[in-house]
Length: 299
Image (cartoon, rainbow, N blue to C red; front, side, top):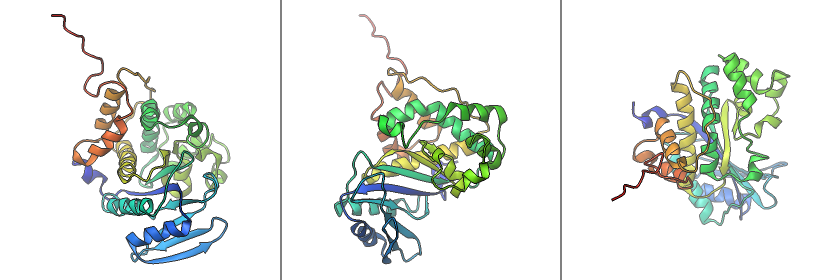
């Protein structure tokens, strides 16, 4: 089946942390794209919102992790590929209005995983764990982010998935929360386990897997690429019967080749994913065509 058709209809949402302009001006920029009504909801996060004519609400709220004068843009539930162009136009409008990002800002991509069972979600965890050395290098994630808001997948979690082979969400949640206070933990919005590059707490709390790897950007093509990569990972976990979990070693000689093979295996083939491949390969050393450099023939 065509990969675009497989991803068609998958639901996602994004949170984009920005600086540079007020939350009011951020929402005004969104309004210029989607129309509707702008509201100041206030509250402890000084939330501004734009309710589009179709009823979907875009928010801009304060985020204490970024510092003063910020706006965390939160999209409504969006559908792939139909809503990608709207999202990209919103990003361009915010940038045109003066929105910026800095090293404190991040992007979080939420993918609807409510239809996946425990085995499929275990596949996702194992795929990420295996490929994480490549992913982290490709995305150039800072040490500060890795040590705080975007921690790597825990090996103990993977070991327990392989040992117990969870079949449903409850069984998986017991492994994620280390068997203790599972129901209580699921209800906590800001549970400490959420600060991982791939956040399964969001799955148990709101039905989405949250990908927190990404440094923020107002480059519309990069944001689309990040969303596509997350969708492809979730789709791959859904379609395979088994996923290996042995963590790969990052080889500076073959990193670009290894990443290219990984992208092809999850379905990033064709023009639809050309830009995504470009962004995810540009920081990788080595050659995309060869795992090992061919020996020079002596004349």
